[in-house]
Image (cartoon, rainbow, N blue to C red):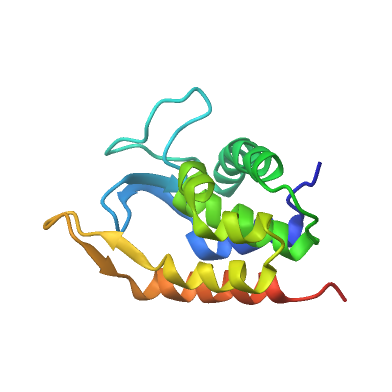
Length: 157
């Protein structure tokens, strides 16, 4: 079973950014710390919630990430290198494990078509506009997907 390494954790922290006060993310979901939407006990983040510091945010992230690393380990049926695993966990953390499970990205990957799977990252660059309910391209999400794809394709040195 693969584990997210320090580079993978740093990648997610960099994408998510640190926010000690609850805020609505670009999709309108209450979020805190490094993109966490729930606490250890499963309670959702709500307006006015605060974290005491980076250590608490990191602990919340570490607890949450186990769900995503387990999901990637379970869903992927082909060999991965550490960069590919890190990119997939980052994707699942951002989009959700259900999205990964239903994705063409996973289907192509499990068919050993790594190049086609890598290109699928780029299609996941939209959010649902909270006001209109329509899917719209999100520049920061497009950048994240580009970086995840690049990491997925990067051989280990």
